[in-house]
Amino acid sequence: MTDSLTVALGQYAPASNVDANLATVAALAADAVRGGAHWLLLPEYASCLDGRRSAMLEAAHQAERVQREIARVAEQSGLWVFLGSHAAYDASVEKMANRSLVFDPRGQVRAAYDKLHMFDVTLADGTQIQESRHYRPGNQAVVLTTPWCKVGLSVCYDLRFPHLYRALSQAGAEILLVPAAFTRQTGPGHWRTLLQARAVENRAFVLAAASCGESGNGRTSHGHSLVIDPDGVVLAELDGEPGLLIQSISLGDVAKRRQQLPSLQHDRPFDIESHDATQEVES
Image (cartoon, rainbow, N blue to C red):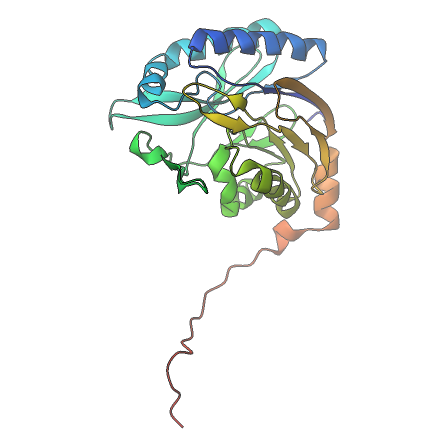
């Protein structure tokens, strides 16, 4: 496999209009090619982000068209394109899936991953988000072998579940992808810290393409797309504005770091023994 890899992380504020977002993706791909990138990584809900269910449902019914257009971008640009996620309608349960797709330079879909963990939370300002009301979770973790290395897929809120990334790394992933639309409430305190932790824990590169700014119906995102090395060092970062982050990485660093500190090999199964210290002990 090739050791050197140049990645481009596209950061923007996905609009409610699918066509506008597809045009943004095409422009980012052209810039990525000019920057010498092999991969283009897009954020969560790259084809449409809107706080209204009706808008997302309309976009979900265009999932096949989105897939065709992203495939065309990949084929015309010669890039591997990682569609961070898009809404795809699942008629069997009458809900949407938050689905990530990977396209090779021929426009072929090489992997699909449905977000495992639903973002059902109450934010500090009282805002309630119940992703599971309109989306159904996936049930499969995904590792994809590329010409460079093995890649572990995830989406946004998955980041808060470290056992997922451990399993991906144990399955051979050397790069962990975390496309996201982190909120502005949680982003400043949590985003970078969690990403660095996943990198250090698993001695892996973390590539996190993020949406930013204001999307449809007032939905706001933190931005700050990041490339992090296996030591948790931030190699490159965008701010909260739209942009394209291009960074070269050396994949040989993963094997080197994992040899120096082989925590993946040191994992041990264990049982939990429970004790109750609230009861009086008989003398």
